[in-house]
Each structure stands twice: as structure tokens, then as C-alpha cells.
Amino acid sequence: MSFSQSLIKDAQPYLKANKQNSFIQDVISNRLSPDVLNYYIQQDLRYADAETIVQTQLITKSKTIEDQRLFADQLSAHLRTVSDLFEALTKNVKQDWPNQRNQAIQPVTFLYREHILSQAREGSLLNVLAPFEAGIWMYIELGKYLESTGKIKSGNNFYTWVQDVQDPNLAGHDGISNQFLAIIDRESEKADQAQLAYVRKQFLRSCLLEWYFWDAASRQLTWEDFDKLAFKNDGSGLL
Image (cartoon, rainbow, N blue to C red; front, side, top):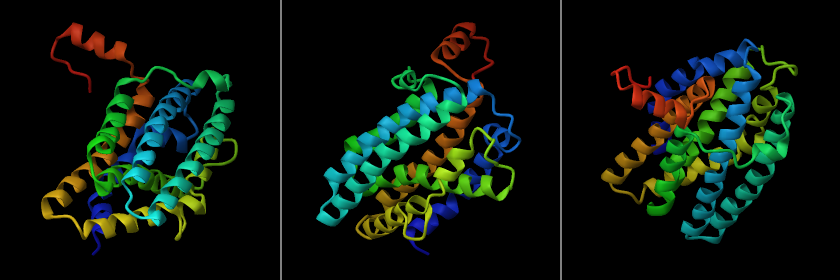
């Protein structure tokens, strides 16, 4: 079993949990409220900004022209498709597209951004790529799951998202996700056991943070919510 295959195997409980998340289940039943979807759009745009930074670092940390070209091409695709996707989703919630950009970064988004950005600041190519690819892999698998239900029709507000994450350029046999997994396997051969254990932890943490990202959208969590719970200070906690 390759290193990337072992990561995916270990991530299966996280995938199952993501599938069962209330946000995903509301997509299936077409009960996702416009406010919840709008929160998701605004926060995922801020996460996508962090992805842009990560991808520039992947280019910088690459040792070959071929890798640099691959990451540069994906960055270009990312900038194009993210804008197109979220502009389309914004129409479903009847919001003004220019106002969706640069909204306040809320707590879970902050944590997830910091998770991938910390690797970009300090890590090797393998350290940076693995937690970034985890999010891509999770989105692809959730897209497959949602499509398999047969319930995501064109009238569903999340229909465009489901179609987008199944694009062959992303999710196909020769798509960018599989190309990233191949690089992870290549780079893993140069790593010692301590680094591989660390990379595994970071990959799985991305999968965990995906769950919390959906949950935060469903609950529309803000810093004000964190303040209220801290000042309440009754031991009830956030979760």
C-alpha cells in the first residue's frame, strides 16, 4: 500500500463523519437555508484565499520545473474556478457578489486557514501538500456521495458545487487530485518515519477541520458566539 493510500484508508472515519454532517444532509434533503449557504460562501472564499497562498508556496518549494508548472497551472485554475463557482452560488442566495469578498474571518475558518498556512510557512513540499490535498480529496469524495444519492437536482442550491467538484480536471483519473497524491507518494520516499507520522496527522486534521467547517456553517458561528460562551463561563462549553 502506498503512503497516500494509507492516508486515505485512515481518513475513512472522517469521510463518514463528513457525510453525516447536518450541512451535507440538509443539502441532500434540499433544506439548506440561504443564510447557512451564504455563511459558507463567505467563509470558504476566505479559506480559498489561504489556499492561494499555499499554492504559491508549493511552487516555491518545488525542486523541478515540471512540479512548478503543475502547481502554477493548478493555481491559475483555482483562481478561475473558485470565482466562477462562488459567484454562481451567490446568485442562489440573492446576494451581491462583490460584497461576498473580504468578509470577516470567523473562528473555525481562522483555525483551518492557520492549519494549512503554518505548513506553508515552515514545512517541506510534502508537509505543505498533504494537508492541502486532504481538503481536495474530501470535497471530491463528498461530491461523489452527494451525486450518488440521486437527490441533487438542478433546483438544489448546492447543485453547482456538486458538479464542480466532480470535474474530471480535478477528480478524474488524471485529475489534479491524483497528481497531487502521486507527488505525496514520491516525496514520502525521501522522508523518515517521524516526518511521515507528522504528515499523516496533518492530513487527518484537515479532514477533521472539514467537518468543523460544515458544522460552523450550519450554526453560523461567529467570534461573538465565542465571546458569549467565554463570558457565560458556566462550564457548558462551545460544542
